[in-house]
Image (cartoon, rainbow, N blue to C red; front, side, top):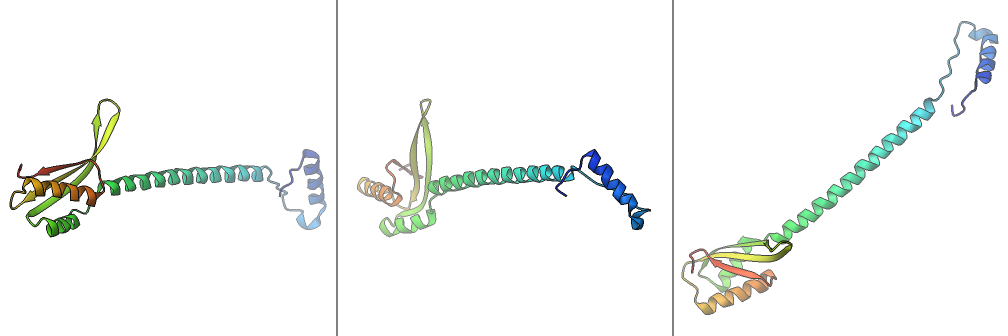
Length: 151
């Protein structure tokens, strides 16, 4: 029930209950405040659900951001090696790495490092062509090229 009875109304209901011959052996029991408690409990549960949903939404956003950052830092080295071999057949292995280098106290510079190995040393002209092609292929401005052989 949504109505709350005062003491006078409860007394009146008790008198009516006793007058009924079919309810002589029964007992009148009226529970009050249960709807208020139930409403409060329902409100608490809904608030907790909303809070949990907000927390999940925040975590989902964070996961999406981290996945995007991870995707931006990853390269398909196998595919890049295949493309590299078409232009530079002496390249036998390649690894592309992207990271940020900290400079001074509060500055970072994004850098892409490429480590490669060749069956025959690249001459200066081909090494420069390789560098330019990689910068274009990887869409980066700051590229450092390292030969695994130290050449």
